[in-house]
Structures are given as C-alpha cells and as structure tokens.
Length: 262
Image (tube, rainbow, N blue to C red; front, top):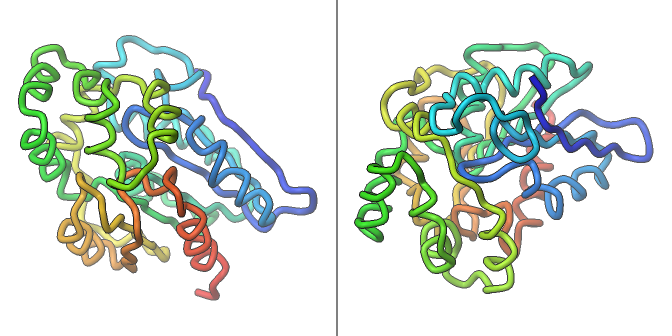
C-alpha cells in the first residue's frame, strides 16, 4: 500500500538517514517547518512518514480500527529500503512505535533512536487520566463515538493538553485545524492491548521529555528510561516539544546525541 513520505536530501553526501515518526492525530506534514529542514541543513537525508489513514497515505478500511502493529509495518516498509546508517526519531505515539519497531525489526542499519515525549512502555493510562481530569465530558464522548476528535477539536482543549502554557496563539491556529482523528484501536493498543516488552534494544536511546508536558509526566519517562537502558533529558516545552518555540534547542540536543561517538 502507498505510505506517504516527505523526503529531503542535503546538497552533499548524507551523514545518515533520519526517519521521523509522528504522534497521535498528526502526519508527516508537522515536521516540514522544523526538524526536517533543520536536519537536512546539517547534512542528513530526512524522511518523514505518515502511517496508513494519515496525511496523504492510502486509506485502508476505517481509521478507527487501525492497529499499532499496522503502523509498525508501515514504518518497516520504508526503513527496510534504506541503505546505510539509519536514525529514528519518534514523537509521542511515534516513540511508542519506535519501541515496538526495534523489538520486531532489529536491524544493523539502525544505530540510534530518540523518543520525544513518548508514550511509555507502561502505556497511555497516565495521559488518559490527565485528559479525563481536564475534559471529562469530551473524553466520554470520545469513548461513545470511538473518535478522539472531541478531545482535540477545539483550540483551548488542544492548547491545554498538547502545548506548553506560553505557546503563542499563532502556532495553535496554524496546527490545530490540520490535526486529524486517530485510531481508537491504536489507543486501546497503547492503553493495554499491545504494550512493548520492557526490553533493551541493543542500540543507544535518548528520551527527551517536556518540562511542561501535561500528558506524559517525568515519572513515567524515568521508568521507561530504566526499562530501555536509555538516557533521559528533560527540556523546556510541552507535549509537542518538536513544534513549539525553542524546538531548535531540542534538535541540537538530538544532533549532539547522533554525532557522539558511542
């Protein structure tokens, strides 16, 4: 099936290929104005992926019932064709997918991976409780309709749940209208049905958390870090730390990790 990729190449021979994996309710498009051009300018091939039923990827069945395993296979359909060194960057659900991917499709080509504000291996229960506390009726509506549009379909709700308090309205206005619904089955996978094993992947991992992340707290990331034998860095920002003002600082920390001898 057709999986959308946005691929940018440096002007000279690339250092490596970076694959960008998006989070809940997004697509490859949300890397286009930040990480993608920044890392390309640093000399990397950069490929952003939209999973099936996201962005401009092929629609297969109802979005509501797409699984995490299907998203993992969408990533594999792209990564398996890359020659040379590969680095993975997964945000939110994308970080959860990276954890599954490294267990299901270990590859000598994948040298390092970064998880940004990741859904931890223990699942999305903590984030679910945060949503319930903030918007209980919207969450109930989501459960009854098998749709997460009621949770993120308003500027005020999206800002509270997914961005740092100081984020400017201009960014919210640009991002929220482009957000889409998410698979209810994938949510259940992240809640309980398909949690990754607490297993170290055998490659260096960096987890970056947002100090103002309303959904994923530091305690959950510390636990995940220990499970994976990863390094944890907390940085200023909310859940969408890759979109917010100051994302360049996050990109610089990631690039430092990629370029370090290890």
